[in-house]
Image 1: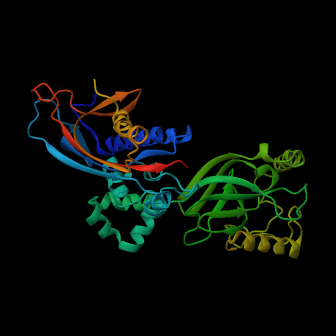
Image 2 (image 1 turned 180 degrees about the vertical axis):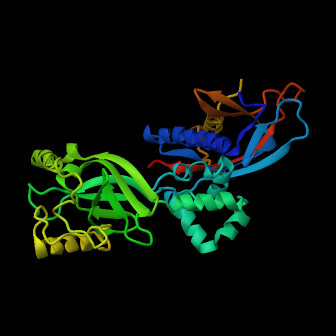
Image 3 (image 1 turned 30 degrees about the horizontal axis):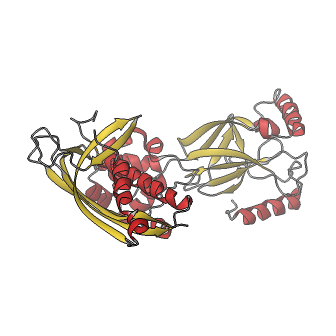
Length: 315
Length: 79
């Protein structure tokens, strides 16, 4: 064994053992496929493993006893076969929402590897699970149970509540026609906090049509289908993402984008003409005239309909 | 040279399986309590669990001290 001196993580050992059992089961099952009516299958197995046990940080490592080793520990492993329903019932749902960043990416260096391992022990594999646990138990309980220093835990929780953009998708309104410019569907998490977010593409503020924690629907002009997207949920708290949707647009929309970009050149500082803005000019709302999405009441009805269909809350 | 654990298990099952055809006695389950020598081996970037019955009746200081395995095999009908 290459890692003889350091030992190997117990998880790896159990994986290696179960992989051997699976292979044995598969081999014995093969006989049934070539016409033998009965075959054997492993039902239960237990092994008293003579080994040395070490802890490296929060990782349990084992080293099988070598010849001459006398003072060894014994690990008693019992394995049994389970059915698919039992497996599904007893398996923790590890599948993390596609729009959630991996825990490691979201928390960055705020937690050490050992801290993250302790979170996994507590069944926390995603940012939303961490936030839920904090809401249910409180920061102090997490600190006490997981033995993670309060300052690191606080930093991690702060990072876990920052906005995150995972995807940007074009979205057409129903009955909007081929010529219409698509809206932008922004997926991610923590996209709304105490106030509606400010969404910008290349620095230009876009009107928000719907906003929830995981979804934003914004109206964009044809020339705003690519560039740097910023979602700012509080002053100085924002997430940025580069995106390009032109390849997903129909040729007419790309042509419109080119024309729109030309039209923007002489009046870069002017606000987007198709939408109105509120008194402070901070959070534009859908204006009285939005010809690309249908006009007046029709556009509003269409957007409300889309909101209901998507089960999201309209701003 | 120790074998991968799966080979040892399959061979133990195979040792019983032919009895049905040869003697007419049907074995429905098998319980084994045997000493085994285990080792881990890195093979093709994969960790492999090797386990086999001891090669000698008397263990010398150069041999691995055997572990204990209790195994239950049961009949399974073809799907």
